[in-house]
Image (cartoon, chains in turn cyan, blue):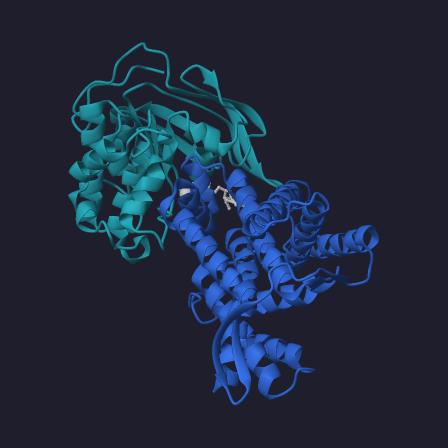
Length: 255
Length: 304
Ligand SMILES: Nc1ncnc2c1ncn2[C@@H]1O[C@H](COP(=O)(O)OP(=O)(O)O)[C@@H](O)[C@H]1O
Ligand SMILES: [Mg+2]
């Protein structure tokens, strides 16, 4: 894979020629008889934002969940920072520095914002979560105002901020984001994407971003992959992908 | 007036026992959506362990008041907790992700196993114990009727309140409690946050079983007669309590237990002792028809 180019959206060049933080090799997964992923291979370098774009039902969420241990892969390997985590139980993977803000946000509806965030710090074990809590508030000040409110009563945008904030509470090395823009007003999407960009630029956080909103995702990411029917069909730098006619036709709606 | 006051005392202490058992039903239901039909029998086993411990202590000549009761409690809790862990591990966990009725049928099977095991090993005849804690406080006397607050009733109420207080702190303030609530609300998400959901579910069974053992020990102290079948009726009534309070709701389970205890006691006192069990079952049916979410349950569509 070529090194990521310097992109306006990302604000800095990701480090080159390091070992990948995440390496997925020939990964296949299925739900019963339904094949959802077929021999997917991809890499994410430390400090990179990589996006995975694809239509509804392409297998994007399945890929993120398979990386997190459920469903178990039928074939292939997942290597995190040189360590083979294929087939490991979900909780063990999440305690090795992976965090996910899943599709649909999955905020705990009957826990307060504060409790939701503390749940995110579960993987920190004995560490004091307060400093990380402050960092999340700095990123999403709205959450601080809603601290005692129940998760289920937040607006969609607030829930998305909470889901990302909760994922950040474990101080992950790799952040997996599943369609953070889904169902949100453009202004809120902009805020959230800006927060992801800032996180990456300021802390070097590595992000794998799944999106249907291909244009925005590619503007944010260094590199991208295109998933069609559970297979990777295209890969390249964001600039490269944004320029391809077939991408423009299929995912960018003539942007 | 005096008579009613006596019934109130009796009803509350009985209701505490139901409440303790109901908490176990509601916890397990909340976290894995299963009615644990063997839970009443765990209560029964707890009572028997307490009885055996009492006999051992007496044989050793060391049964002495509060210390003896504490040992009975701890022994009963330890054994049932171990049972709860084993049952979850061996009987329920392998069925997770299987069709919904599978663990239910397994629970009925376990219930039969426990009853028959105790029947065979302890005999089928009711086991009377001497009164372990006789006497009480005379609250008032009216027209020759003495209202008595028995020491065993004080013990039941005191211990139940203490256990529930500890349990409430556990659920609301500790990481384990948070993990339990997270699993109850979204188990998959809990796992995505690094929570070992299998372990959390195990501990839920363990805690529920230990609470049932507390109830079993209290029952033994209060009524002094147990047999292998007491778990069935107590189980159904505690289940009714959990449904009445709103299944899945912990305060609801305690409230439901108190109400069932009071209704049953007053019903027996003023209408008919013979039909006292009918009262509880009627409430179950009426609740299911008119108030399916219970008194403190959530008004939301049940997840399947
Ligand atoms: N829990 C599931 N059980 C069975 N099939 C599923 C399940 N989740 C997803 N699928 C199927 O797997 C395929 C990929 O789904 P998904 O990963 O959700 O796609 P995407 O996130 O790209 O929209 C789809 O055909 C979907 O119907
Ligand atoms: Mg999806």
